[in-house]
Image (cartoon, rainbow, N blue to C red; front, side, top):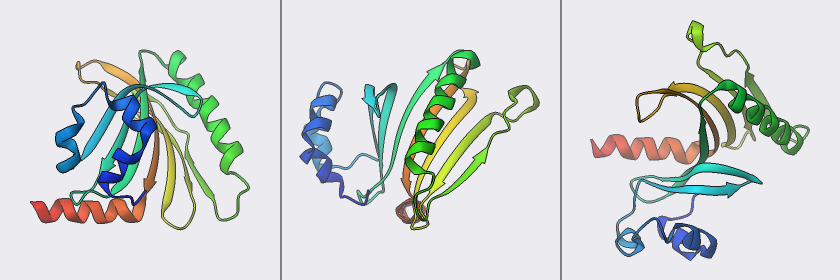
Length: 164
């Protein structure tokens, strides 16, 4: 986090993964706001997509991986398993706080369940299970894992507003 946009082109693993999905030459000179890579493995799990988000000035501030599911019986066990792994990684570490929203009832309008880990310095890891509309207008269960530098995210939002 906080690296300039051009630094991603120095990461051989990312370049190898993404080379089939993008024509990298023009992207090196004109920062994209979001680079999305399909079909990736991250944290020992398969994900449909991986995204890197950049501010208008090209500073990396957010990372997200996500997958979609047709039913809660497919999505919820994966959410629970991943939350257990994150608890093992983060709980008990000095300065880490955990906040959980475990109410989830799409029929009554509560369409998101989440757990967030914060380090008190602006870094955040957030796991979300969300029931929402997909690009094909159907309702889908999305499992998303975010890593965010909230200070850089706030600065990026200010840059976006300045562009308007």
